[in-house]
Length: 239
Image (cartoon, rainbow, N blue to C red; front, side, top):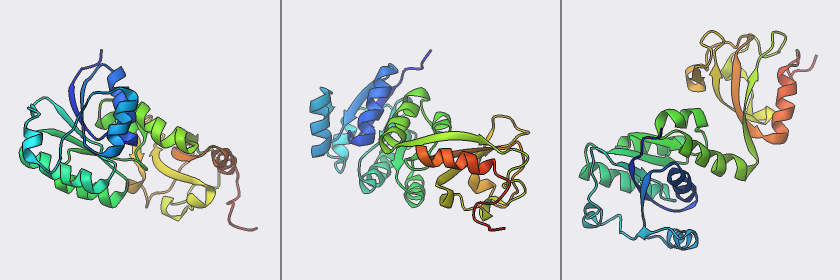
């Protein structure tokens, strides 16, 4: 059974729009807050009630009667600068609130965390499993899948390393995954079963047979990558 929450969603652009749809389907009570032209048009098209506020006016935000002990605050503005300003403002006004923000880069993710966000979703690096651990589980997972993967012909896949693969014994940092058309997101260690270890924790370790690579790639490139993983010969080394 879904734990229904009161959610204040700041922003109704591309991500906020899809996020709203899935959170609504999950049964959460959502208030959409913004005043940008894009959001107003989207809300009119979707027939969504939108509360127009100026995020730079504290009185507008305080008038929302946010319960910082129980409500969830989503900062999904289209521009990172607006999200950063909003997180700073919300944290100052509501020291104990649960604030979640979206980001489009590692640098912006750091800034948003320093500004006071409890959790930050990097739209280009977050996997559905990681989002599940951070937010409200299936609703946000579907939103991420719709915005990042389907609209860009991308797919996430788990690829097991066979004993004969050229990857066995190689260090993660020495493998040109991007040259093979994929982004390595995480590794599932064969001894820890389904536990994900994110690549920034494994750069200096060697890959072993039986480990699973969690990758994101265009669909056509993914098919090629799977074939390469089963090859005994490094694709960029001539013999």
